[in-house]
Length: 144
Image (tube, rainbow, N blue to C red):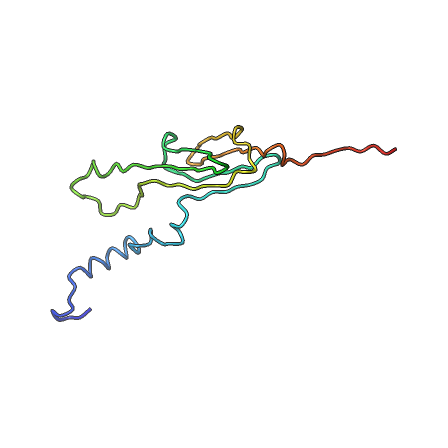
């Protein structure tokens, strides 16, 4: 920073303070982190697949599950509450995100009529039974 009037930035001390206290201001917008709206794990468990999606802070009513033409879409919407409560702008920092989030998955190997869903402690769990035609068939052959 220059010591004279030319090049003087009166906000540089505030910026430095904010970085030391709160970290880098653009970190929440890191492309690698924000490329996926929410994290999911999918595992095979015998005759079904189990999908677990991290959706903390959502109400069950704000999560939608739709299957259309072998595509499962999980969508969730979080509404902003701070806009109405604090019009004076008293926030020092607001990092909680609001908006719509959505991910789609190919479920052509799944029987969509038998999918069950639960939502506990911010984790959405889907038990998705495989289609009967895809299950391995075991046959015992008799020796003659």
